[in-house]
Length: 95
Length: 422
Image (tube, rainbow over the protein chains, first blue to last red):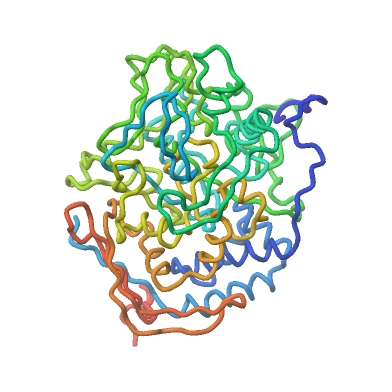
């Protein structure tokens, strides 16, 4: 597939297969990334940078489909919950 | 063929050898909701173990874009199709997920790759249903899955502006994979040389290079396609679970068991690896304060990958929240609905355990939560959420404290250029 056209009778090549997808799935994906990275301590800038980087295709696709304003709203919602605290990790005396 | 107990299937199943279980088992949990396919794990493994001549195509750790990607291409679609052909419309589950440790997902009524082989393959030496991927199927690990191909007929070149093309409005997610160090390894079952063995101390599955003659039966049999053939040595190779680190023999470890390279390199904090206690019957022994035990058997948010294959894999996944349920049920079994319900609105203990991910590269054997005051109460995406200033403490093998995570009010750190200004 990468170099040649698929063989017409190859049953494993996906040709015109539709997958269920709508704005709600994209929104849920954006919410999941936003929640998870907010829990990890990322601030608004860092989370939005993740969405804006085209090489993180999942997050970036959500930004393209939902728009900057909607993704910003999702990130703000995550940060309203998880961004109010800062997690501090203290080593137990390891080198 | 001997009968062995497979707790993930909730029943006994056929396997070419009698059951033998390690005292502890190498296991891991990946939280897919966090994975952005940065491939740090992939490169950590590659640069440690498979950078030599003849290993160019080998990615013991990889991240693939589901549903349309795979390494090798179509690995799961192909084995699922073979199972369906062997047992049309019969690959189903019955019963309901429960708290029973010996059947947490109900009972699998279909055929495993061992049982399907027993009924459909000949000669008798063919012990496992499988197939040998072609060279072409191995050659594109996550390449072309997220990026459009380059000009036709030009090798090794991607479209330079491809990432800016319009996106398709569909769902997809990233599936990070390594060898599952299965409790009933298909590679081990298929090897005519008995070159593959499972270590009694930690359940890591290794391939003895001295014994291997490169028949590739293991490559054919592993349903996850995590054994790979090396042409220039004419032997097969596989993930070794970074066993020197797990043994605590890495110079940095100071004797403490350390997590593998792919785990330690995960910048998305997706991964946690441990060594879980195993009962005499092969099920996980009750170990309430082990974080992996908690996620698999108490919170039930982490599920095995394609349990229906029957190898009892020891890799577990917190499923992605946005993917259609039928797809997830096929991939992770009937426990998906409960796992999603709980991981989308994590309770107090689960939130605490999620804070243990990637805070240290040492293996966590036990955790403790010291409860603190409530710091937030509200809603998140329409669901109620309550946060507490709890302290989570992680302990290592000898009960030594590895680290503790607390929650503090945010502080502002003055930039260096203004450090002394008022």
